[in-house]
Image (tube, rainbow, N blue to C red):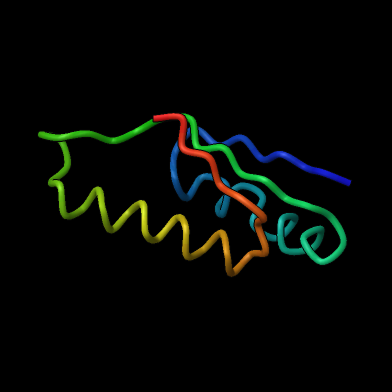
Length: 71
């Protein structure tokens, strides 16, 4: 079965349904869609790169097949 998790911001998927993602990723294809994007000058370019890297890293740890950033 395919499952799509839609999160408004990076880390919302982890805080909201991280345990459920982990539970189902063993038997289902999990996909993640991050809807919004942070931008400068509110965040530095370095922080934006780190946040994107963290989202990709954690999604792999949870067993997410693919992550989509709508930006």
